[in-house]
Figure 1 (cartoon, rainbow, N blue to C red):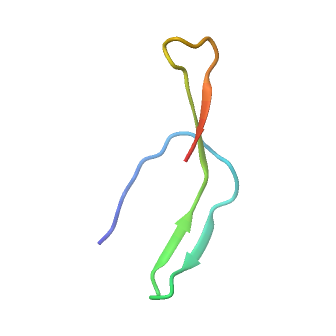
Figure 2: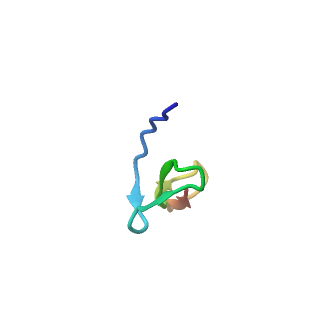
Length: 48
């Protein structure tokens, strides 16, 4: 099984590659995305 995701934003740091206990490879990243709510003047940063 594979998962493909498109993320548009800024990386908050270097990606970290790991191997799970079961031997599967995985990578974790922190991504920041700026959103501007309709009632706000300045954008808000959301972290994923």
